[in-house]
Structure formats: structure tokens, C-alpha cells
Length: 82
Image (cartoon, rainbow, N blue to C red; front, side, top):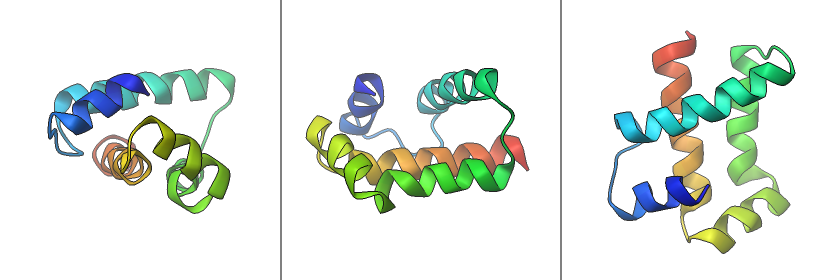
């Protein structure tokens, strides 16, 4: 999460390759536990902002990180999972 916050601070857009590499690593860790559908993955992305506890945890790391991480996950799904 710290690396993603650093990329956000550097101004990397949601679809930037360094950010997408971080998101891909997270995706690979997730699917190593169990397969997830695109819809499930997008629901997880929404949880970054919609789940109060998760949102608060992201925002403690860096203001705006919850929405940035969600956008990065949504960009990943659009580019690689559909």
C-alpha cells in the first residue's frame, strides 16, 4: 500500500504501468487464495471507498488513497480482466 501511496503522490495516473504492476501483484495474491470473477473484483475495488473501515484505513496512509486505489483496480479490471 505504501508503494501505491508513493505513486499517487508522484502523480501517476490510475492506468500507469508502475501502478498497474502493483495492482497486478495484489490481484495475483488474491487469486492464489481463490478464483474471483470480474464482478467480485470490482466489488472489492468499490469496498476501498464504500466500506467505512477500509476507507478509513486507506486514508490514514494518505489522503485520497482509497479513491486512487479503487480507480487503479477498476483500470486493471478494464484492461486485463474483460
